[in-house]
Image 1 (tube, rainbow, N blue to C red):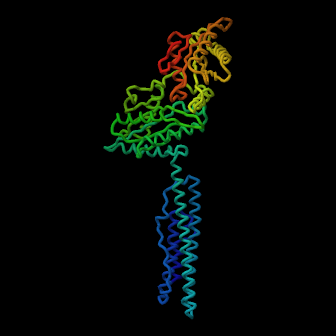
Image 2: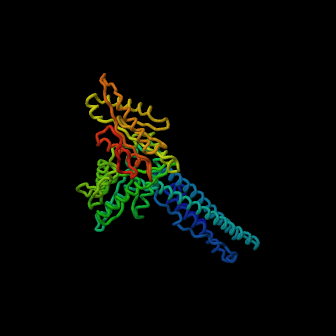
Image 3: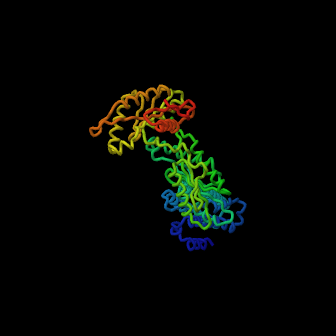
Length: 504
């Protein structure tokens, strides 16, 4: 009987060749081996019914579902290593099962040939110990296989997750785009795609460094998760661009949801190494339309996002399949439409942010002066573009000589300057700026042996309230524009109520 079973094992399970196959076949081999091991044990007890009272232990049933694993990406090195470990473990357990079966056969032969009861009792005890050993080995094997299956699941999740933000990665986004595009043909289709891009983020990274940029990206991901429903698909599309797919009943509600999401990011304060940051975003919104491919949906959304960037950033646009229109009747945020780009001056912006953070912790106040050479276009057209650079260098040297060493004087671009005055209140900042303006106007530069009259206009603001760098610079910039509109060669200070400039 047992020799027949051994022959069947060899013919049905081609040994090493089977163990080297896919994971599913390996597990099947393991289960078959376990079955025959314990089936041989049961047959031994059946042929020797007189010893049934000796109390053989039954082997635990194996649950094939315990070995089930989700499909994995075989291109992943980590997953291949796990599969190799499973193969080695399966081979080991199958070998143990075979050894156990042979031991059962040996004990059965001892029982048949036993001449005395004492020998029979010893043989039964040996059989019981063999069963206990096999049960322990199978228990350890099951635990190890379950651990390996959990490891595979973890790597599968990581292969679909952006490591920085913990959102879905681009692979997930592309799969979901296809799924929602196919579902858009149904009668209840109401899915929308919004692309959100951080404004001027490259300059942000250049100014503060990539660790600060990474913290902002993580923060934006948190805002997206907090403000979107749990059934929304939220992904990092790449770089500083995020994507979200959500359901909404009509266009007005979808536009409001996308606009609120954009504003929520703008309101968020991101902290990094004692500094506080705010960022603005632009967004594009589209609805999944019937019979439209996923790539066509994404193309329309890209066009809407580009329109928002083109119209000043810090706003959003909808592409309804025919035309582009702003998400709100107001269009772009007026505060984003200033000539001054704060990220154009890397060290100045970083120093100003640091000073504002110190002020919020109880430090001294700060005033900021923005200056611009008057009639730059006339100078460039009359004397050439190089003349603007020469005059700008001369004005920069004069400003550095006029202010204290602790003050930060920066050239933002040819003809445009900024000065940070720590510990200086607004009236005193106005007086120092007025002196500098008068001295510049009294000195004449020679360009190509021609004396050139140079004047500057300035705007001045003092830190207040919940200011951040962009708000403080924006107020100073608006004061500068007011001075230029009034004819130039003058300064304008922000009033105590902050927004209405008062000429000086």
